[in-house]
Length: 368
Length: 130
Image (cartoon, rainbow over all chains, first blue to last red; front, side):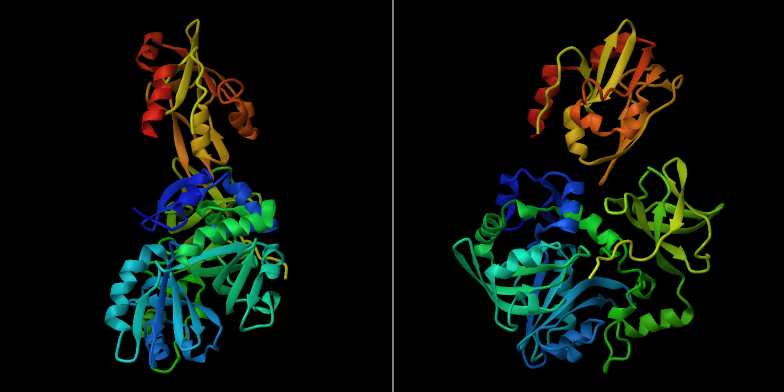
């Protein structure tokens, strides 16, 4: 199993480690619920070094990335970040990614579990004369600070090059940055995105500096910044209605069924791999859609459980769990589009059927 | 992670404990199991009068990330259920070996417990696993 450069830090903190995407990662340090709540109310610290970081360079970099992704890179401004998808030729999802438009290059941040698959896919479909791909996953560390207090923790120690200061960095923007934290200096980048539904930032520094950066941040922020594992990351993203590859997205599924139209620009010039199949699927009629539910039970609905309308199976749960913020169990499920949104559905939880109550999507939106 | 398993009872490899007194076996799960499960969200226990079988599920316990079956350490009939646990799962965290007991079984054959682990062997199994 692979490890990130912060593995020793996680062990020293007594984290419970699990396999995720081929990496040994912390699922929790203390309690998933406590870590979840600190991100909703304060600030949490996350190791994201398992994610893949690819740089695409050369005069045809933008055109090459546009060919393999669904969002429109050519229209992005420098310093802008967008959510996007990599599709296969049948319109299924190879990965969901973030695309960063940097001066003279494009950065792609991809899921850990899809890193190797994408290296091969990009070698075949992205790389061309004038567009080179560099896998920088091992060289650049990525650490996130997420939560309403993230800005006040980071602003005093962050100097941004492309905007006046950290508060001026817009949502889904990146800047060159230097950090002066607890007497230590770091050079790299800072971005403002997240997978938690909260305001938050990602810090990018050379991997050999990652442990120093993690420790400096904790020293600087003290108890206000709490290390958080993948368990909380999952409950946070579920409340925020954000898809997780392998749950809501996969090679066999049409992403138009997953509320992701915003990231799919079917009319961009020259199209993209998978576009025609995607449109053909839409033309033929999408079979199902991703819907949000409250589970009216103490039992937790989880990935793979079947959903019924009376005796008829009408869908399947893709993600489910307790929602610490809402104080009930919640689930996302793919449901037959023909099923009315107010139908009285039930989820099969082992031997019992538990009622599902339609819920607004997403479950949680922060106040801005 | 470790255990404070008391030596007045026996243990299953799946982390249940069983304390026998006059043919009635009190059953719970160990402090180690509670730690492993993490944030607890739900417990499903049988009704008084239910028949249970050795090695079979008598209930289930669910945490944020996982669900686990509770396996009966012996066969018999359930004579008492700690129904207060359902709304006070923290009791398991605070007192896995005392207030966190789950069910009491009128055992059909108390010698079944002899196959279970004594406290020191249970603790050693955890150490070996680490």
